[in-house]
Amino acid sequence: PRYWAVVPAAGIGTRMGSDVPKQYLLLNNRPVIEHALQALLKHPKIVKVIVAIADSDHWWANTSASRHSRVQRVLGGTERADSVLNGLLSLQGDADADDWVLVHDAARPCLHRTDLENLIETLRHHAVGGLLGYPLSDTIKRVNDQASVLETLPREQLWRAFTPQMFRYGALQAALECARSSALQVTDEASAIELAGLIPQLVEGRSDNIKITRPEDLELAHFYLNQHSR
Ligand code: C5P
Image (tube, rainbow, N blue to C red; front, side, top):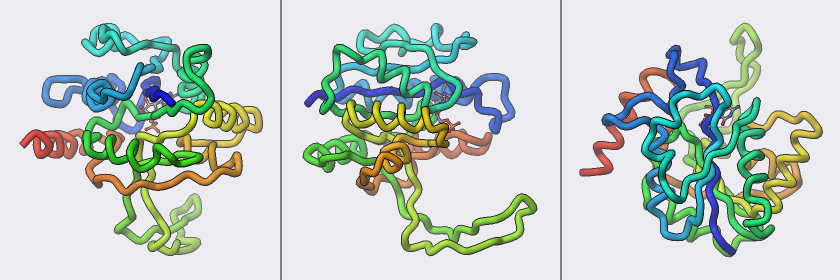
């Protein structure tokens, strides 16, 4: 099987409180998305990287990643899952059902090459696939609209779900299409795969593979990136 990557980058990032979507904010003088693409583009096994870009986007064309020979752009969708599905559809005819697809957030700039390598090596003979993650250190509460605590979840069983998430092309497309047609809310690929009755494998990665969500995350990512290059 071959390896493909899909990078959803069509979000507008309302939690950042910035006019520029978070994937285009600058980190070490380069947009966040270029950092997110770097590990994927450096990996020798990944044939092509499909990037899902919003219709209204006027930043992508100015990135150097947009001119990379192994990068291809598709139109994003309303939800993250729609953006990923558009990416998968663009691979029709090229990818085989049992090829691997790695989906990685454009807003996750600190993916370390050793994590990517470890994910691929751990899962390459797996029937379903899986994702990078990290065990939780905080206790997690489920709350109502007024933030009153409804219950405390058992922490030993809880992990944070990161990206890349790596699944077979055919199974991932079917799972995302099924989730869409039943209007089920899926915030990552693994949840679509789970709804299809399959069991993803979690692969413990580095805790610094954060998603830029709030303004303070950018400074944290800056710190982590500089740690990586030391
Ligand atoms: O909003 P969230 O942080 O979950 O977004 C995760 C990733 O999905 C981001 O890289 C964002 O650009 C992307 N996304 C997308 N299409 C959407 C919404 C989010 O490609 N409609």
